[in-house]
Amino acid sequence: MALASLPKVVLGSVAFGVFWVLAVFPSVPFMPIGRTAGALLSAVLMIIFHVISPDDAYASVDLPILGLLFSTMVVGTYLKSAGMFKHLGTLLAWKSQGGRDLLCRVCIVTALASALFTNDTCCVVLTEFVLELAAERNLPAKPFLLALASSANIGSSATPIGNPQNLVIAFNSKIPFPKFLLGILPAMLAGMAVNMVMLLCMYWKDLEGTSPDLIADGKQMEAVEEGLAASKTPSPGQLKSPKQTNGAYSSPLMTEDISTKHPWFMQCTEERRKLFLKSFAYIVTVGMVIAYMVGLNMSWTAITTAIALVVVDFRDAEPCLDKVSYSLLVFFSGMFITVSGFNKTGLPGAIWNFMAPYSKVNSVGGISVLSIIILLLSNLASNVPTVLLMGGEVASAAALISSAAVTRSWLLLAWVSTVAGNLSLLGSAANLIVCEQARRATRNAYDLTFWNHIVFGVPSTLIVTAIGIPLIGKINV
Image (cartoon, one colour):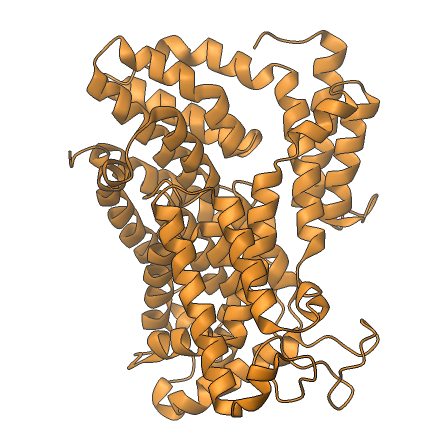
């Protein structure tokens, strides 16, 4: 894309700068309006400055991603009520040797789960749980939040369903799921291990929490579950519903006081109702993952799973839907418009056009330059627009070398654009989800700032990216 007119480039850059500043410093003294309002302000400025038209602004809002994010929040609520995190907590705490061992388990479990459930999903459902788990062991929240966000990004690189940009790459490149997985898996496993070691090195002394021998694992996990339930229970003033228990709302699944249940449920014992609803939550979630793997639409698959859980629960879904972070959805809407406007200035395209001659994938130097470009653009214009912008250009250049080079170039783009998300807090949606959910948590809230993240993010991203690049495409199907 050619550069737009000078006024459009300047005004578009100003609007994008407003977004960047308010996303990095949500409580900046001269405009303490927060990230969500800052994203909306930037989107409005893009329209007022005529960088993007109102119709194009609406069209730039990625509804599939918003639908996926919304539905995974709903599914996550039901999985919490079904006790999934109690089992996960047992897995993480089983024979744990302390904070360092627990950090390693968080990295491994998150990375592997993100490859199947997407990085955003894992961050949505695990952030508050990780906060509670760290607090129960008298451990600082920061290393565990960094482990969660960074491992989710690294793990999601391995599959086409791990994140939105991989989905775009798989669709455009026509690379089959098994070939995509095996092409990136060695890099993902090596990156996960290196990232984990770097976390341990940076926070070794901070991870000397209470010994697990001093706290019974069963009681500890029970306390974590109680904390999560308490933090997610809305107050009587939030909603007006005739069904309340002691002035508070019951959880969306497995409650005794149910007058709207189907007669079959009323004839069952309480234990059978609980078992049925728990089993259904697990079964449809597994079905959702299988649907992802066979290539069904990710967003509508997740929405279908969420509505199936709502319907089978047989009650007013408002208390459950109230737990969705709508401010996060609004933030992403504003970000989509802002990024689209910035792309229309032509600056990201101009950067690529200038560097393309030095970015050939048949040399070490070319791959290094290409990786730097992807890292920078992914953090300036977001990774999905970067993939949309560069995918065709990179593949066309690689096609002049060989067909194998084309496949490797797509996989390289997937790896670098995904790991680039760990560079800064704004590098990926997963980082922002972890940051916002941790800040808004009712119990053990923690503000993961831009600087807290970047101190670890920059060295981790550069080292993990460099180690993974030689391993891309080494296993052929």
